[in-house]
Amino acid sequence: MRKILFLFICCFSLQIQAQEASLAFLYLRNGEYEKAAAIYKTLHEKNPLNSSYLTNLVTSYQQLENFNEVASIINKQLEKRSDQYYLLVELGYNYQLQYKQDSATFFYEKALKSIEKSKNKGYLIGRSFQKNHLLDYALIAFKKSMEFNPNANFNLQIAAIYGEKADLENMFNTYLNLVETNLNYLPTAKTYIGRYITDDSENEANIFLRRLLIKKMQNNPQNSWNELLSWLYMQQKEYSKAFIQEKALFKRDASSLKGITDLGGIAFKDKNYTVSQECFKYILDNTTIVEEQLRAKLYLLQIAIKTDAEINSTEQKFQELFSAYGKSQYTISIQLVYAEFLAFRKNEPEDAISLLKDALKLPISEFEKGSIKTKLADILVYTNKFSTALIYYTQVQNDLKSHTIGQTARFKIAQTSYFKGDFEWAQSQLKVLKNSTSQLIANDALDLNLLITDNVVKDSLKIALKTYAKADLLAFQNKNQAAIDTLQVLLNNFKGHSLEDEALFKQAQLLEKHGGFIKAESNYLQIIALNKDDILVDDAIYYVANLYLNQLENIEKAKEYYQTIIFEYPSSIYLVDARKKYRKLRGDVVN
Image: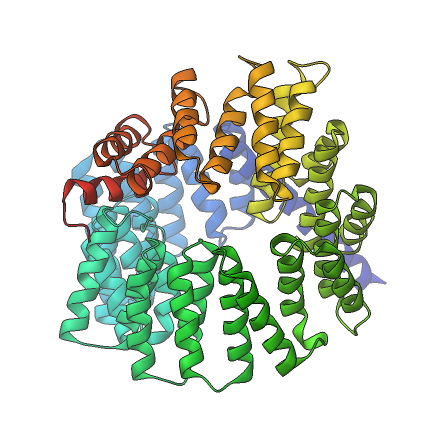
């Protein structure tokens, strides 16, 4: 009984202490330093070996400029534990805060000197320097620790400090040297390097890394440099350059096509169908593994659909796949793509629906069922069978709530309700999705919710929004000319409405698909003229620049509008691409 009582008291005491520590940290984070200091003082006295309590107590007193109390606490702690050399750094920093630099330097040097006699304390000393933003001292501490303890490896810490100092060259060199000595560091190096890399090839960090990797490849060739360079090009969306590196890797080690497969998938997702096609054709030429062949053929079929390849040729390729592999639980991914092809390209939705209903009878997983039902519902929306589509979407959403498939279904419920003009129900679904684990779904939900919110208040009858939603539905159903005409009705009848820019932009996009480039140009220019602060202005500027470049053959106009993005819309998502195209048109050498 006594043991049980003792254990109960201990557990209760620990719980109270944990609550006090949480409260003290909350006070510290909120800048209530007196309250934090009072609790941390009690905690430190009860737990003198807990470095976290001591460090936070010191921080609290320093924020209150109670430097004498800090010095007293640290000195008392050093009397009890003279081997806590990192406290010498804290003591020195306490003097630095009082502008007593000589005293600060004395204790910093003393801390560094202690590494020679206690090599295992180097990490804590280096971390203390780093925590207090004494980066040069931190570098010395970590390097000295490695010098006196050959088993220690603080290169990750050293690289991070170079990063804090904005010393890109030394930071990258340190990460690359780590990879050179141990390939297991490659994923870690990518993670940390990725914090400095952007999609802009002219970004200073990108340039530094590219040059260092090329130099490494020349002086000490190894696969990791090609892999990192390929990764860098992928971050910059320069997929053709990445493909060159991946092919070089495969030629050295033909055991895996994973790098090329991954690149092909990424390029496909980013709508760079040319490079994606090259990747998957290369895979077909270099593999005998059935799964790899099947995946490559499926991607090539999807590319054919996306690029409006000849319908009969695409149909024949599907039939060849089904002849070889059948319509079974092992070819669900092919059947899904084929159903989309039947409905949206061949306009044979009934055949697509029949195919998917047969697929649901196969012994498949709940996730595969969810994907099939979602595709089935998409096709039902295509044929205006909204009620049945909503039943399927709802089943998927209920069965796979936490999965991306379920969240996609919930978004499609909202989208279908929006198509029908039921905006309130659509918004109720969209609000749930704002915290979706899928950023793409969350962004799509936010965009649709904003479209509805911005336009229902100003139009009590919602006639303009219903007209726009109808055009949206017609576009989804590939009835592009009807969508263009519907948008024109909106533009004629609701001049000056808040939807005008949205209608002009959507109509311009549809017009481009049908070769109506002059009218599309007019729409983009109208958006630009409406309001230079409008959310769609940079989109209109970018697309009209592309139109001048690719269709209207007006290079000077293209340069003018790319330049507008660069100088007037520096936060635009199109900035990097606009800069690349502008520099190329200007005749600069683009890396």
